[in-house]
Length: 208
Length: 234
Image: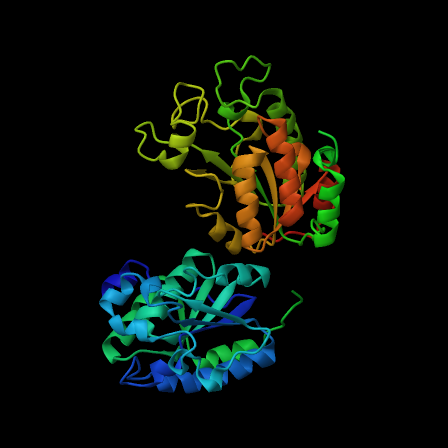
């Protein structure tokens, strides 16, 4: 990957001063390999449990966005033509629920989305503006799908995306690795759970 | 226009409805504002001395009055280190990007309309971007629609928007609604926005104040700017 460094890609942005934690699609369906799960998603969920605890202690804003159809699946559009089982992720079903270990609290942002990015068709951006957020700690699945889409959008909206590598997962190794690489070169800093934990513990969370 | 000219249009029953719903409360402005100056272009105001018969969309002297107030507010903003964003509305001469607006109103013709490359489409010299300001062209009414404005504001940690320019009922209103939907606190200095119709102007101010912005006098806005804590711009 010499050409990337030659072209000056993959520079480090550094943490911002007002982060929020974003958890994408850690739903029951994604823990089950017969539905949408696989490879390292369950491990990523376990590590995110730790990060969620640290984030709540640091009192940073937390946002949970999950994928579900609110009708017969026609609200998913052509995405459901590519992946028809998406129509089985029905709002109200247990499979579409966020895993118990990551249950949202009342003061946290919670939204359904009908496509990849946590921003598309949701009011996430408005809530983040209201909270004065400048950077996002990104966790969730799948690395190659909704995590990447959300990370690209986060960058486009002006937030620093910090992808927590221990806390994102995919159903297969190759797309997970190649998308981490892509995100790290162009959109996000790739950070470890340890790094983020140290950063959050040291953060002075100001008034909002 | 006087301070609360919309009051002239309200009946007793209207007032009772507004009171019952507790509409139009005042939102405390934030500490990181940005100015968004909307479409202050020659086609919107015509020539300075008057004589705008050749300008089909001109708001005339009303526009110039608002331009003068805008200059005051912009000066106070620069002094306070507040970022300033300028938008302009300009459609391609080919007519390809006129869309619905061209069907409702027209695609623009001649030197004094909003067609790209014409004199009409240029910024009014008195209220034009300087080096370091942000400026972009838009194709629709809201300054947010299809533009990088959100990203600029997020990147600058902005929490409050002060909206200037025109027209009150079209591009200003669309921008104010979008800004409020993005949870920005919005201030509209009533003397710094303008329209070609009094009715549209007054009703739009009323509607904006009712649900998405603080419509204020210019002095209050300038006081706010002068009282800001130091703005650290990255």
